[in-house]
Image 1 (tube, helix red, strand yellow):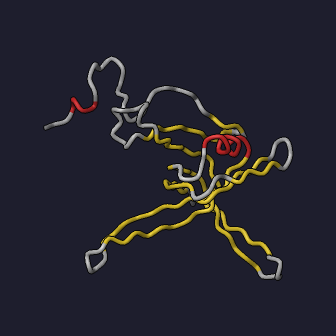
Image 2 (tube, helix red, strand yellow; image 1 turned 90 degrees about the vertical axis):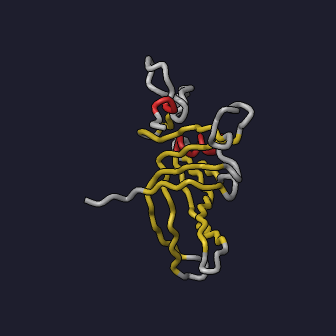
Length: 160
């Protein structure tokens, strides 16, 4: 058995490019930058950035058109695909893309969430199931919720 699964969290480089092919086929694509920092041998901080080509289809593409903008912090889940094509000069080219099947947009809205310790980011979920996007609209925040009826928050259970 093999698994082709990728989860990326980064910043969107450009607004999504959305193409409508017919009534049921919509494609959104955008670049996503992921970065990591490390210290070199001289003790200097070095930032390494990778760019990923993200592709979303159908209802997920329509949702991306509404909610994703340049600079947005986005988490995308999907699979890696490499395809080839022949350019105008007849040269074979290869492109690696992430075909997304779900994404989260973290909107910077600190005024709505003053108690949020995640720098004011608010999570929005979209995922594709059978060609339609799911956005359950629940107001429950998985980072700030705890089991009902306990009367305590997760911080109350800390051993120190």
